[in-house]
Length: 567
Image 1 (cartoon, rainbow, N blue to C red):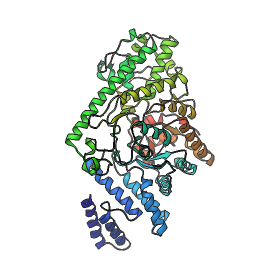
Image 2 (tube, rainbow, N blue to C red):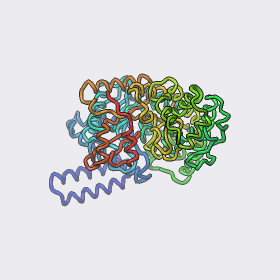
Image 3 (cartoon, rainbow, N blue to C red):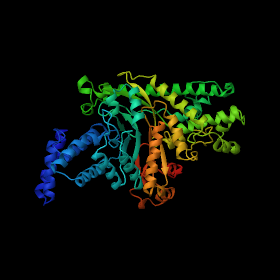
Image 4 (cartoon, rainbow, N blue to C red):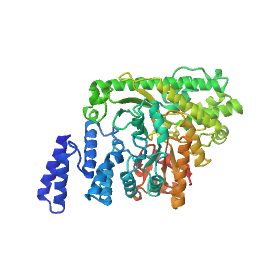
């Protein structure tokens, strides 16, 4: 690390010999900073930011650009330096803002997911409000730049000043890029994972929407994925899958002819999910063993609490907290399929289960009327429907319980549930046959914790009620709820107040996380046709932000298809 920084020192001094003022003084200041950090303690705000950036660069060089190196709660560890500089007159607020903007620009240069999500706000380790000047400067920086990959993770607690929440909501007038997190629910989840209270309060967001301790955990977030949406397919086909040309992949469960009640269907679903989770865990355990034996990471380990104390690399269980995640997506596709079976087969008796599976195998050919009834009349997750929401909670709770049955062999760490998509909803749908909710084969599945596109027609509050029910399960790995907003409804101060109130209400219900795309359908369609006119149009894909024009058309279409809500 020191040698890397020294090379920058030498280069800056060499360039200064040929430079004229004021560039010469700037280069000499760069050399002075790089000679000191990150080897020694920063003396100023700009040195602190330089130290963070240089560390992230070397982490990425050391381990690979597609890895996840999020810097954590930067507003907390940068604030003492800013405060000291302001009090001594060494810096102004505007100069500090420019430094943060420059850091954000550099952070967004990375092509991989790697070093991006930054956590701000929330409570400190003692449970007190942690919002400070750096928190506000980072919001303003995001507003001015109109985007940041992955974005800002904004923690909201009962102690959070409403001014901070309103500022975060106001940023949506210009760009996406903020995700809101409920401190109350997040902290409770980490306590269930074995975190000490102070460490749970000090959590950060890594990757897209995954929760972990700050500088003390090996989260292995989203390292492996359980294809949730395939579980319902294997349930109805004795463990066989469309993607495998109907070969046996899952555990063999009873044929649908023997399923005489909805409870029989749920029992088979639970068996298939248990098998899928166990297979994913086996693969993940093999990966962890390979990493521990062949790919130690001493540089990363030197920054993680517990590794030096225990004398063990992070890959060998040296961190203070160790856990892996069972990542799943397509919740609404799964829930809507189960509710459709309950409604159409066992309540309304419109079709037998055998007949329904036959239509699924035939992609609803000759059964369009039935498909439309399943699409439009069956209960739906995201509509505040008690039946659908009860099944959503049953499914998420089952995922949590099945995940927690498993421990990491290397360190005994817990497996946790995680509900995000990371943009995989299109690929997942491409490998899936027709489903009982009326979705056709190869169509995209729902993303993360969000309702299926076009089914959330009862308004924002209905979505929040349904999502809050699903969040009652301990999915402490994290969840991602995406919503599109009509930008015209964010123009007034009253609308910003209303958006803040909606977030507060959702969090009081027990929602864990939510993020918004404040771009209208017409804007997205025009950007798709004329990408050159929208170089800075940022959207939330799943937990991460991305330039809309750089996404595949399939992902663009999926985002456009989301319901557009008004405040």
